[in-house]
Structure formats: structure tokens, C-alpha cells
Image (cartoon, rainbow, N blue to C red; front, side, top):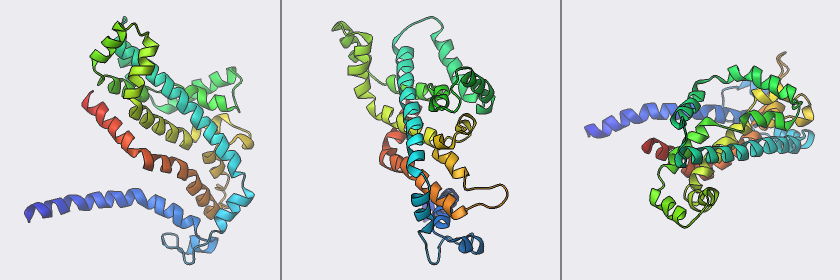
Length: 274
């Protein structure tokens, strides 16, 4: 009985934490189903009476949603692909090649975790300006083509591959990239998928850097387009804005729901084999 009480005492703060995490999502969905009068009269009421889909109808009919989805997908997919490639190649080099200062370089790469993103904004912006990539999707993607966390996770995953497999491939005369493609990648495929999903979600939700690079509204991503309905002068169309937010959140949310097993396993492996 005492054990049950102790477990219950632990469950209560966990349930409170879950509620705090889920409340913004409930609020977003609820507000998207309210008309303007309900939004201001019953702001904290999560149950719209009656619910209305007028906000979604407005978004789908009068808002170039497909254009913004296309822009966001191109940037997120391109960034994800390059991050995965550089992470796998760099991790392969750190694990299976011996070269001078390898550990120093790897540890220096880990230090990038502690560099605030705001410190990199100005040099990255000036570099994109010099390359004439402002107001271009490549200008948003290029600074994010390498990721220290991805390299770390891929390295930790590759460390779990038995050396005997690689030695057998080397004895058979396989070249390094053949070993990577035919031996290593099939074994770490779930981790690659997990890291790719995390990269895609982060790129999909990126706001501040695209805001600096993209000036043309036709090239906006979904997070930037959402800002169009929120006015500093108070004329915000909150119902429509929340409808856009719901539609914006669906793709990464669906990805995470179907692939969360890969993500959890990857972080568990990186913690155990680190």
C-alpha cells in the first residue's frame, strides 16, 4: 500500500507537467475552432461552443498555403539531406580513420553545442550577403548543412558496430565507401532515420534565420507566413493564425508519432555507448 502511495505521489507532478506541456496545443486547436467573439469572451475555455471551421476555410481558400508548404518543405528537406550526409561522413571518419589530432578535432566539434545561435547570426548573414544568397532558399539552408549533434549521435551509433564486420570487409578488398554503404548504413538505418526526422522538424519550425534571409513574401516559409496574421498594433486575426499554426504543426507531428521509436532508441544508444 505504501508503495502505491509513493507511486501516486510521483505520478501527480508528472501529470501536472504533461498538462503544462499539452495545454498550448489544446489552446491552439481550440482557438482555431472559435470565431472572434468567442476568442475574446472565453479565451481560456478549451471547448468552443459551437465550433466553427470558418478559419480553416479562410486559410484554404484565401491563403496561398500550398506555396508556403512547398517553400518550407524544400528548405527543410534540403537541409535535412545535407545534415544527414555530413553527419554520417564525419562520424565515419572519426570512427574508422586514424589521423593526427582526431580527438582534439572531435572535442572542438562538441564545443559548438555551447555556442549561442545569436553569436553566429551576423557572420552568417554577412557571408550569405557576399555570396548573393539573400532572399534565396539556399541562403537559409547553407549555414545549417553541418550539425555537431548529428555527428555526435552518428558516431555513438557506429561505435556499436562490431569491428569484426569491418575487418572482414577490408580483407575482402572493400573500399571505405563500399564499407560505409553496404556494411555500416544498413546497420545504422534506424538511427539515420531518427536523426533525419529531428533535423526535418527543426528545419520545418525554424523562424528567426529565414526571417532575416527571406524578404519576398512569395518565398516565405510557414512560420513566417503565420506572422502575417499577428499584428503588433492589436489587429491580429487570432483564429486564422491558430488555424495556420495547426496546419503547420501537422507534418512534423505526424512524422514524430510514426517514428518516435527510432528517435528514442537512438538517444538511448548514444547514452549507453558514449
